Image 1 (cartoon, one colour):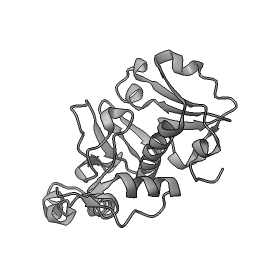
Image 2 (image 1 turned 30 degrees about the horizontal axis):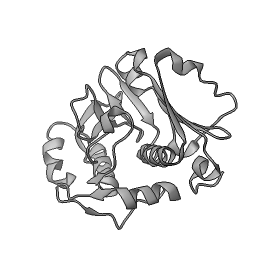
Image 3 (image 1 turned 90 degrees about the vertical axis):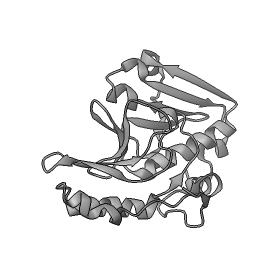
Image 4 (image 1 turned 30 degrees about the vertical axis):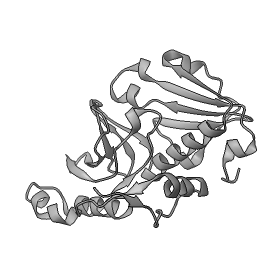
Length: 220
């Protein structure tokens, strides 16, 4: 893959995420999904699933973003592959190769969710955009917080989020973000759910944030 700067940031992202992708992402050339269409059709992959993969590649293919705080950094770059599923349960496909030897794959679910798959399918965000927004928010919060606290296992349940509101742009499912009066909290439950490993649950608390730190250009 020959990387280059991004001039065409995908639409549908917040201003914070658009700036993050254009400033910190690079994009490389990947082989078109169409080259494998007949091979997948011959293995009974529905044409509609291959169309979904092609649409994903058109929008996200080759995009390499900075490391995620969890999941050993996330996918190396976006590149759809390895469709699997059934007419009953729906079809998944690989979102991109892992950066390290993690015990799960990064997948796009039947409804467009971004998640991980090992013992079970665990959607992290309702859309790929949500995953990208979470990366952008993590980078923003880490730059502006005066203190970052890491909490793991059962201690995550002791974080008082009653006065916090969900950060909606991340479209959180297993992973969520919460905004308080002067702090942001990211809760990562994906590995705990996917691998049946409750102690793998993690939260990062970004404290002592001002208004810019809390929102980063996104309207409250």
